[in-house]
Image 1 (tube, rainbow, N blue to C red):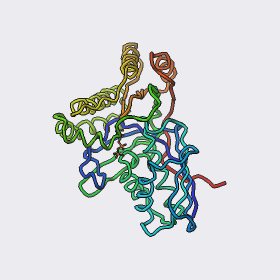
Image 2 (image 1 turned 135 degrees about the vertical axis):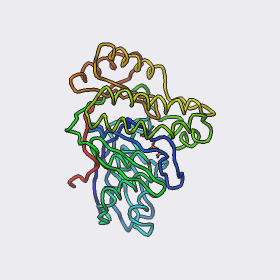
Image 3 (image 1 turned 180 degrees about the horizontal axis):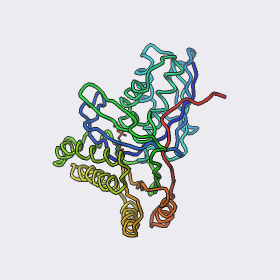
Image 4 (image 1 turned 30 degrees about the horizontal axis):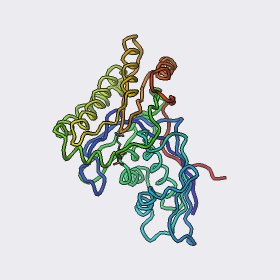
Length: 320
Ligand code: DP6
């Protein structure tokens, strides 16, 4: 009745933005991501018949605001007649700040709950359950390069290349550490309702995804860089065109973009992507990673940088 799991966040290169079914949390578009290795969320879970409700501790403190989502996710994995659970999680990076902490948290949660309850679900079934809690979490069940395909019925998630086959590096420039003002769920719903660019976003996604898929297959960094930056800026254009507008960037985010542009002018193999928060993620070839890290660290307004390679999907840990 007890299990411990670990999962890493993933960074989308072709973004999930928008829902075709809000109640079932089914994405409106397909997406492609890379799973990281040095950032992690650790999740310990115990079902206990003596408990009168679920309890949740995040990084050593009670987290009542996140409890309902966690309880709902456990109901989906185990069934609503389940015993209550004691859930403890910790992460080695800021949570709720556009660093995909919900992705690693829900991926680890479904793996731990499945083991603790003895459900024995397949990885894709677990990905669907994690995705129902947070769309991007479905991708963290897999490692390396991951593609998520959505239909009106469900999602399919698969690894299209493993982490060793194209060992890209990701440098994360943290430009603000507090939680973001507007969560991605609410922001996506607002974009769909009010942005004049939302329909173009939906129309063009499969073409962007096909180019990215080819780039991964061919290990063509320049091709991946061009389509990933385009897709990221297009997603943010959808947000900027929403009413009221959704702007996650700060001055340091823009300064980091300029740093990446300067590195590209110096012929380094690097591109940026930005999610629903002010942090910039620079993806680069391993030989350029140290230069990229140093340049972002020196960029005005950057609080700190983190560096990661690509890593595996969510997995169980041996218990003490
Ligand atoms: C910008 O997965 O956090 O990071 O399903 O509403 O929980 P919910 O959204 P979430 O959104 C991630 C959006 C993104 C792009 C991406 O990761 O693909």
